[in-house]
Length: 241
Image: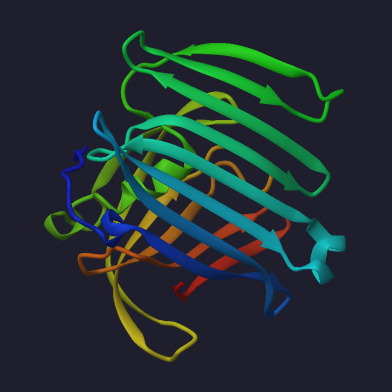
């Protein structure tokens, strides 16, 4: 398996990416929600970190089917995007989840605080921090650091990820270069990858998330596609704010 080498994608200077989410209903793709990713580089006298935020909402007219109000945020180091502190506050269907993880590399521990539906009770736990464990949001940006241009179709990159307070050993597979056409009818050359998914509330565990990254220095995710619990969902890049 290959290891990551730092590149310089566009988020190094800050970034606001907007997407439309489409749900596959029968033979149709229906616009069902919006997603936004923001990246900000924060510097002080002692350190430089990234702060990443992702927010996703279903359109109100589709809330009856599956209401989504998601927010993820994470702080990471500025070189390898190793997470420092992660927060999740999501509502998917009738399920509300609030999780926070603090990554203590000095003591090799992940300190967890979680709050689910059960009586609103806050639970605390500690996991061993072994190897390079990422959260779901920093993993997305980590994919943009990988040196796909120097690798071949089928090469895999290791990915250890904490999801729902459990650590999974997963992988990212490079599937080669592929041209895609977006809503603006422009054609883009992309690096196509698939990311193995653990069990979750919306995505099917055991299925792969397919991502098309722009095959340039920016490595912007242009298209994302995956099976979910009741069909398929696709997110298409609409532009930068």
